[in-house]
Length: 98
Image (tube, rainbow, N blue to C red; front, side):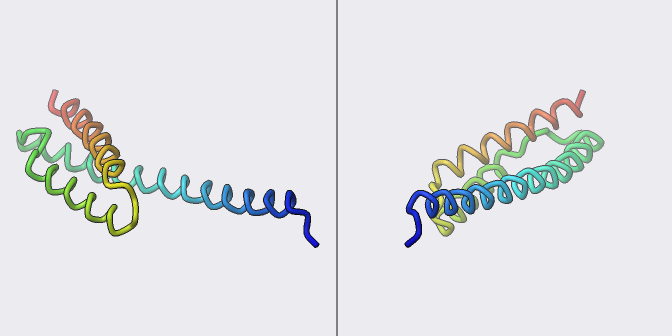
């Protein structure tokens, strides 16, 4: 018979390896997203457009809440996460306006 502690350690190791891979995916995905939002910020600055777009932001939040629900992720958490990302994007856009 397998030692339960060894089995638990092996399972834990596997989960942690998956978490590490997913963390890397998240970081690279966020980096790619910010490359695009920085390009949007430059376009907005060049054409004297406001740094934020409340209508788009509301649409995106609603869309993310739906996706979160479909993915069985807490929609409240998803909304908080997107609000944080949006606030960072707006902060970058405001810097480009100066």
